[in-house]
Length: 154
Length: 154
DNA sequence: TTTATAATTGCAAATCATTTGCAATTGGAG
DNA sequence: CTCCAATTGCAAATGATTTGCAATTATAAA
Image (cartoon, rainbow over all chains, first blue to last red; front, side):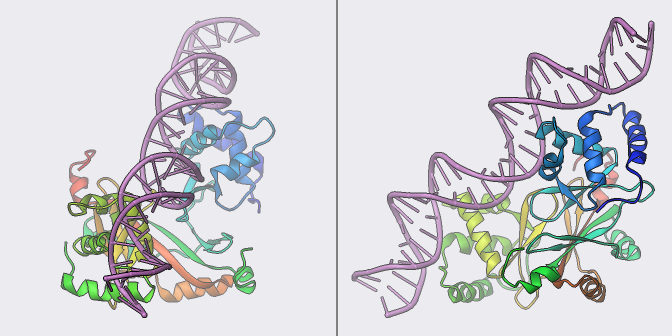
């Protein structure tokens, strides 16, 4: 459930990004980055809020921080179609582009590296005259565990 | 902006679906189906509500109707990532599976028939032991019109 | 180190799409 | 034509997310 890089390597890099935009390295932001670092799956604001160390911070601050971290590219937002935004830390060099396979019963998430063919995307962009085309792709299904205990929520 | 089949052909088919589930063919439902029929792009509940003929109906009814129509498979829900559900009428025989290319500036929508390779999807399902795997895929970019009037909202 | 100050935060109230409880209506099977 | 479950209108409730504002705090500059 944890990333490969050392947690400590996270802050210097993030600090750099923040400073570049005249932003401050605050307690809440540091905590959010650490929390996201130790969970390899997309997390909701509430989940992150719940993991905040003692003292914590206001939920509104979590929302504001995530919005900022997303805007400077340290974090990526995902939409699993349930109207709850989820966030994942972007790896250093990595462009962070990947997809997910979400269980429609228990919401278990698996990372999916397979991506929509880039050439196809370019083709679609060309055909319609659109520029800067990107895509949002997520898979949904029933995980092995839920498939067994049919009917039950796990 | 309109479908190829005749509007009149819409009701009998829909009636059949509704009756099968002991549901009633009411004014609001008829209107919603007609509105969706003459707009070939996904519409929000508010947009549909705004197009209701004189007399109209309550917005809550639009929400309830769309939910019902979706559950019996007459309508399909789409998520463009802005937290507003959009609905499209499913064509008769058609399984209704296709995607969209949405302008991030003006929200103009273009239908995209190109789909994620089915075999790849099966592969992903197999690799992870998930069953009944489906996907949600949408493209985002800047439409030709917006690309010209750079910076401006069109 | 101290200071000046713009960036942050906490808190509560506001938004916004969507849902729901409930009493009054109404489609349609028999 | 009747009866009753399915629908609807209305207003209040939800739930995620945003925002105004005054108090706090990180940090660049002196």
